[in-house]
Image (cartoon, rainbow, N blue to C red; front, side, top):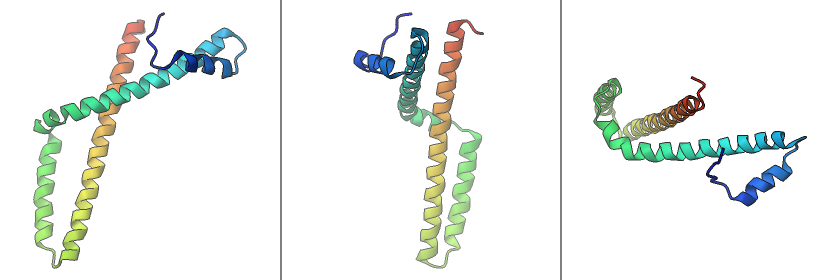
Length: 130
């Protein structure tokens, strides 16, 4: 099967010559695995770029997570109003910042994982394994 390579031909030859193989089929398996790793990295990058592009649309969805976020905002504002000094307020804002960062990274992780699972599913269908 002809493939479009995202790696320079010289690197493929180098991998082939450096792989410990008993025959050409073993070497091709090593190259195939390397190719798959490259494809997964490319798919991750595509997923990340799509996530950035789709963030506005995702934010507009009224999901249970969105409702929970609104509830969190109300509870957080109430907690801030109960603070006696700036140090307590500052601590709460650091907690909020940390929670937001964790949420954003989780969203990114799950989006990219879903994208990759979709790629694997399409690839499986294309191979006729389903």
